Amino acid sequence: MNDEESAQANYVEQHNAFEDVASHFQETAATATISASDPFETENLEAENTADPGRANEDGEEQDVASLPERPADPSTEHIGAVVYFSSISGNTARFITACNFPDEGINVYRIPLRTKEEPLQVREPYVLIVPTYGGGNVKKALLPQIRKFLNGRANRSFIRGVISSGNRNFASAFCAAGDIISQKCHVPFMYNFELIGTPDDHRKVREGVRNFFLEQRKQDAR
Ligand SMILES: Cc1cc2nc3c(=O)[nH]c(=O)nc-3n(C[C@H](O)[C@H](O)[C@H](O)COP(=O)(O)O)c2cc1C
Image (cartoon, rainbow, N blue to C red; front, side, top):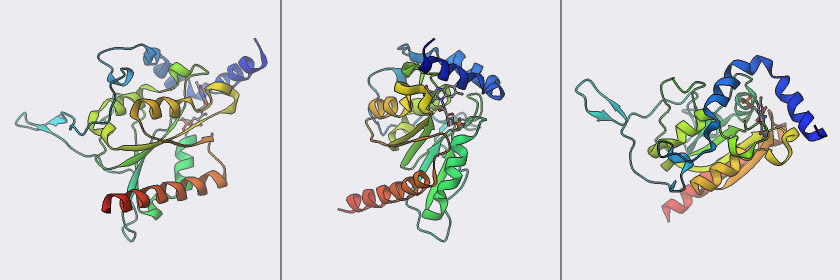
């Protein structure tokens, strides 16, 4: 085992508390193969404005129901956009999101459910996706099934405007690889990357960067 491999192995070992979820991830993360039932793995992942089938109501009719934000934009500010994030039980990304104070900037915050069996998140407004990388050094497995499931919803996918990814530098060339995959597949900019919970400088840059991005988009839409 070389230095890089042993650093990665140590890092994964130190996350015993994470074992339960990690094994669930790995089970579905054999995911790198192309399959018709997993459109996120296909190449035709163009942003489409087609609504998801949604959930059936009591009459059996399909409905497109937007989920509520985990943390809504502060009502005293002007609502300008949204952030969608995933964080495992180790909670690094959740801490990063809290530190960014998005609601104060008029940005809704939505959380992708921890488990794929939970009620799916349905986002129906433009958002920047912020997700950690979980390939254990394997770029092809960098994307968790929870994130894949969210992006497999065509309506969810149609509202993505950019991606920010996190990771750990121990994983060297696979550092933040989830961002590269999502950027390529969804044709959106890979806006920023950060390590673990980020630094105060990361929090400031991302808060301001996301705010300015949405303000700029709004100006362009108005033209
Ligand atoms: C099993 C496992 C695999 C990981 N694989 C990678 C990887 O391939 N690349 C990377 O940059 N970081 C990797 N990481 C680091 C995580 O992306 C990092 O710890 C992140 O902050 C976790 O966010 P969370 O606590 O919000 O889930 C891995 C972590 C674990 C526990």
